[in-house]
Length: 187
Image 1 (spheres, rainbow, N blue to C red):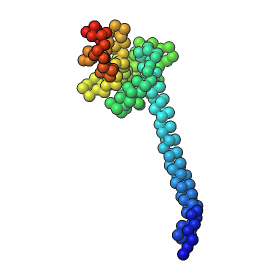
Image 2: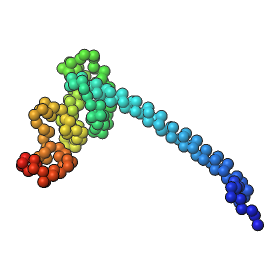
Image 3: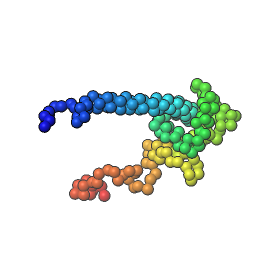
Image 4: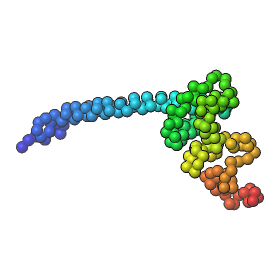
C-alpha cells in the first residue's frame, strides 16, 4: 500500500507535474506574445498610411468647399465609400493634394483641377458631401442622410425631409402618457 500524500507534486510516474505545467504554460505565453505582436505592428503601419490619405481627403474637402470644420468620422465614411466604389480613389487623391497651396480659394483650386484633368473627381467629392451619397447612379452608397450639407442652409427653419411625421427616429422616444392632460390638450 502506498501512502496517500495530500500535497504531493509527483504523479504516478514520479515526475514533477508542476514544473512541466509551468514550462508548458510559459512556452504557450511566450509563443502567444510573439504571434500577437506581429499583426499589431503591421496594423499600426496600415493605420498611419490610411490616416495620411484621410488627412489628404479632408484637406481637399476643406479647400474645394471652403468649410474649415470637417467631421473627421464622416470624412472617413465618405473616403471608405469612395474606395469601395472606385478602388483607384486613393491613388487619385495624391495629384489633387499636390495642387493645393496655402490660402488657395475654391475657385482657383477648381481651375487647377480642371487643367490637370481632375475636375470630375473633384465634382464627385463635392457632390458626395452635399448629397450624402457616393455615386450618382442607382448603385450609389448612402453615407449620411441627416448630415448632408444640402440641409445646412435651411437647418434653422426646416427639418430634414422624412416620411416620419415627427422627424427622423421619432419612434425611439418614450410613448407619452395617455392620461396626461397636457398631451390631450396638445391634440
